[in-house]
Structures are given as structure tokens and as C-alpha cells.
Image (tube, rainbow, N blue to C red; front, side):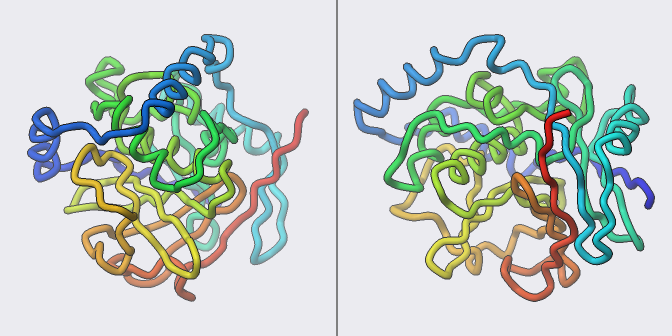
Length: 270
């Protein structure tokens, strides 16, 4: 097994222009009852509840059935202290899991950031994205965290804090949808040449790309992945599984046979 570093997940100049336009854009309307739910759910989060220390467990490599115990994962986390970035651990030169630093600088498995958080119940899978657009602004990590280029917020932290970058938005959106019963995953790859994270929703036999940082111009439903060729995915994860794209990075098919299920994370208290 070996470790690989990926550049920070940042937008590129083309997207900066859209962020400037976002200041002029009217935020999406939500029902008044939802406004109350937003206020109530945000107020319910205390500093103690958003304190994040990851989760313990074991990783199973699905090809070989090899189990990586929590003690080994703890050694990975310890070895990365003082670093900053998005790291993958590989087997046979293929990533099977990823780690990233939290707001304290401590590294955790990507799965851990999906805490199983449901701000409030929803009937429409569009609602979480509309809420996130209203309550969270886009801000680069280096602007928030003293020049550090890669910091991840957990789903509760992302809902609580008013700003964050692409993976913070994506983690919150995916976790909310998962907790509401949908099959959603965080995808990591590139967009317009720059590192990026977004959400993929699998619903009724179709795949949708959810740009979690979107702030305006919402349609009645999420766009089909087939209409979004600008997103080039390398890997996906949810709370328990990690997928690797073994085919073309220009794919718009997130359920094709080129997606290899690499590992399963099983949370276990220790």
C-alpha cells in the first residue's frame, strides 16, 4: 500500500467569474415554513455538537477481503499530522480510500465527514440544495484558514458555518440526501481543469450531477449527469463505500462497469 497526494480541491478562474455574478443573483425562494426550519435547525447546533473527531472503524479491501484495522488507520492519521492536502492510500497503484484534514488540522477518512446529519425532513430532493444556497456562501479554504489550502468541514459544521468551499458544500448536500433515504455520493475529480468535488444522485434508474455550490438558476429538477460533460470524476464515496473510476475521466456515466468498488468502511466504536 502506498500514499498519494492530490492537489487541493479548488475552483478555477472560470468559476470565480460565476461567483462574482452570484452576488447579484436572487437567492432561491423557499417556503416560509422552511425558513423557520432553517432557523430552528441551525440554532439547535451547539459548539459541542459540531465538535468533530472523525469515526473509528475498519476498512475492507473488496478485491482481496483484507481488513485494515483501526490501529493501522490511526497510524496513517498520525503520520499525516502537519501536512495539508487530500491524500489517498493505494493498493496495486489504485486508490481505495482517502483522508483529508479537518478544521483543527487532524486527518480523517473521507467517509467520516458524512456524519448522518439530517437538518430537517424533506419531501423533495431539491430542497437541501436550495437551503444550502441560501445559508452558505462559497469561500476558499486559504481565505478562511490562514493560508491552508485544504480543510474539510463535517456535515454538521458545514450546516453551521456560513461559508465553505466545494467539498464542504458537497459533504453537507450528500449527507442530507443520504439521511433522507436517497443514494447520493460525493464525487472527486476535476472541473474545467481544476480540482473539484460535487454530488451524484442515483434516483429511479437515472444519474444526476448536483453542483452543491450553485447559488442561482435552479430548474425544477437536478440536471442529468449525461448533460454535464465538464465534470471529470476520479473517485466517489459515501458513508461506507469508496469507488474508483477505472475508465475515462471524461465519463458522464456514474453507474457504468468502469466504476470499481474498492473498499468498505465499517464504523466500530473503540
